Length: 541
Image (cartoon, rainbow, N blue to C red; front, side):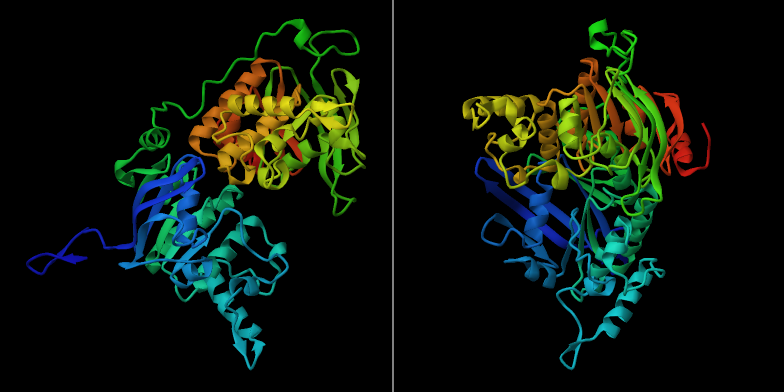
């Protein structure tokens, strides 16, 4: 505490900043990523950084972490009053800045202990001192409540949640630990794993660390943060004490406009002409677009075990069918197998527009696309985009035959016109369609993935966690797009790890538990607690 003029400490006086950012600015060709950003983080504080994708959060932490070196940006930042001019990540780490990026930087084939001390291994007599590293790693794991995790186990055998803990253990084992930056740390975690991680983060405050916490999940921000700084269009808009801020105010500052509701009102099932519905074998006009019966999928690791068993459901034209369930319940495996990405030895039957459909075997995804199915994958960076390619190349990659002449040559003008139009319609923030996809923010990357699959003109659309790692403003855009596509007659199977997302958007909700259908609800007929309890096996429907 700071002493008063009389010598008595002043209660609740703000501590001097551990980290201070002054007027940081960074530009790329055609894009101003940061524009005069100011920020202070105190020791023993969790300081949340909120903003839409593209607001400048990633650029800021790359500067702090030395990924963007000194001399390539304007402004300055200070650690404990000393100006930092990091020329690379190694200097940043030595200076006390530890960053855990959204994409974990672990060596999966090395042990937990080897990852904790990667790059600063202990040696004895010219050999690695494995015993010392394992003992010290075990101590750090115990601090994080991970006494049951052996420091000798390979990281690839750990869940995503435990891998996050290994990253934190590595930061705590650093001798120069002062600032810990967490970038979307719970984006791939289950509810239980997320809560465990948040408990650990709150506990780290008492060790005097300054924690910069970046998350699109505002409920987490308000659960752990002491203060909140909002970025918008590369500028620091305002810093708020959590006790003085509400979710509505933070959202308003993030998007620059009032946002009364995060979710749009649930759209009714559209009334479509008979031509919009799929004719079944009897010539009826109300048959579902997609009919799945007794769908069973064996494990790719152990064919004697089924990861999906006896799944049956219908998907109608214009319907948003939500699929809820915990991680590992089989949600992703279901849509991947229906899209032709799963094992060949599947059982069960599928009909599309009343005609049999067999997704397995070679060319499965191509067959699915030909039958009018598109799928937005869970991991856009690994499975949805060619990061080193241009936006144009990504947008047209799934339907290049539309632009081919004589089956050999690409009509470059037609492709460019289509890409530019699709870029505009999707609301992607980029200089042009030749901009490299890997340089886009997460929200804009997701919009490119959605636009790519919409160019295939699907009648059935599988969306696997379409707003994962996406900010509030981009989420609102995606929600409205989903509703518009349903109103146009597309049948949508929606997977989301956010129960409220499934509830607010879906006309019906299916709940998966351990590879089986555990129940079904009409949209709006269940609360999050009921759905979560059913997902975990604590209730029936």
